[in-house]
Image 1 (spheres, rainbow, N blue to C red):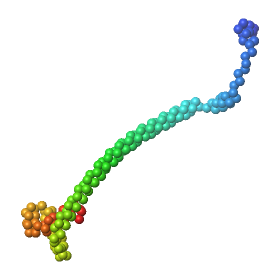
Image 2: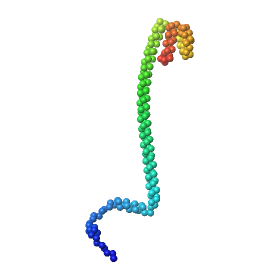
Image 3: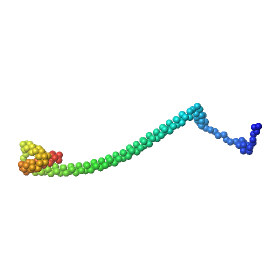
Image 4: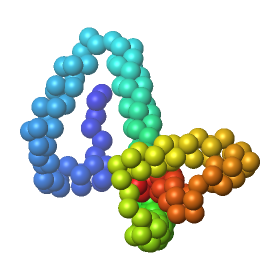
Length: 180
């Protein structure tokens, strides 16, 4: 009773010579490998492996995100350091300018004080004994100046001749300025 029904569409399809599709050999091999691999495999284990892989990918992405954030923060900090160093450099330039100005003034004072000493000493002959006395007077003046007692300063300078008092004061000033 299996009677073959001849429908017009079936006749047409059977009579058409369709070209055979050639499946690449590699695809067939991969299909065979996959079916061999899947035979007897536990799908729960495969899902677990996929979950572990996905979790690992998420961890790697998080690590990369943190690393990128750290690099961005490091770059920002480096920019701040460069700006800070620029400010320090400018400040140092200003300090150098001020130091040069102070040095010029100190040199002027030194030259002026040397001129005063030469004018005083020019008519005075200083012996070794006088030099020792002048050093003693200078030390005494230093002590009195540090005490900041006006009466002692007046008394000390009043007991000296004009030339000696001027010479001791000049040496004291040079000593305090660090140019003697």
